[in-house]
Length: 463
Image (cartoon, rainbow, N blue to C red; front, top):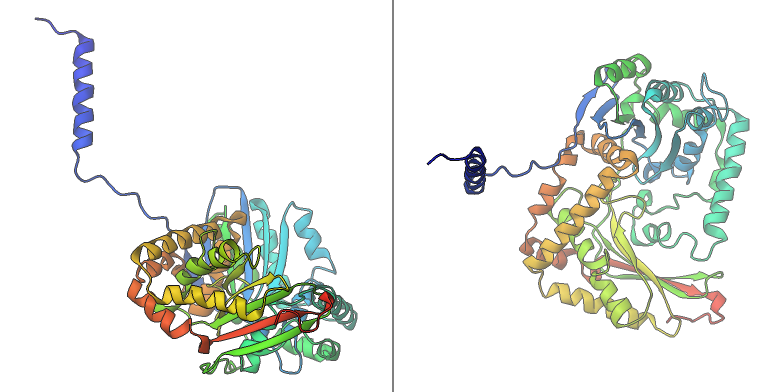
């Protein structure tokens, strides 16, 4: 009997389908890896290249290894003041010309001062990458330091302090306040936004010395992330940054914190607040230890998302508050700092509720996790952590990626750590979680700060 061509083709199709379903070793999808090329110029500048051609844009990020943690003792707020000075002009770019250069070419830019670094970044169309490398190098090698620029920016920063802290309800609470209450070492515990008298006292010599000391290539990391040609970009980096001389860096001060032996409680009167507020902070384990990663997962269980245990207790069950904020490092994330840190959460609550009631409910949550973390709880925390990490890596055209690359280059001399974070969290066991809870989530390791709302008309409100 003669078989039709159609029948033969159908037989071959079903055979191939059967074979494909019976193949035992199907390849697992490869884990996502951030491309990282890391090298140093002869002057010590750390360079990280991370190509990503999903959009025709490039990020240039320059991170200096100087934050407000180690600013001069009689010049609080100086690191932040200097961040403003970096936008006042350089050798070849006058006042506002750096900003105009970015914005008129369709880009965005910003800078910030954090605990352990000051950073500057630009996101521009890829064809403007060389221009921005030149501009960043221009202000690294020669800032326009004048009395007029200093006086102007002293006024700007003082006004920022007044608007954001002094004249706001809950101004500085808890991101600015809590480190000053929870820490003992001045470097971790001073007013990093700046006391007004210290800002006034800054002089031109201070600015010149600060620039020469800390804004040097051997105290910086440069990351380029986005759509670029690596060979071409390397040549530009060498051309514009290679000739900037290195400096002798000063010894780093001791920023260690003593072990906290007992609970600390404070009350801050707020004449502009009309509701009580509370912040509770626990000292963190040392960075990059197993307990550090465990605390990252405990943060997910306790404070992050709708299923967070603190939210379930304080919002859904008790109804004390409408929402909770919390995390490790309120001025960044759990990865982009170097020195001692706290894990903290905060919320406002009705004045009819007492501090003891609020803390009692928090203690109930802490007692529940002390009873033991299960593998199911741990698995859920890892999923949430992984989701947040990939959001960080992909957000804002890759700015989160540039942030981690520069941070790990500055603090660990190893930006490739970005590709090992997920594995470190997966190493955490329920036993390690329970050990971390016992050692760190205990009353002796915490600081409680309550805002007393004087605007509510009761000076003893919230007790």
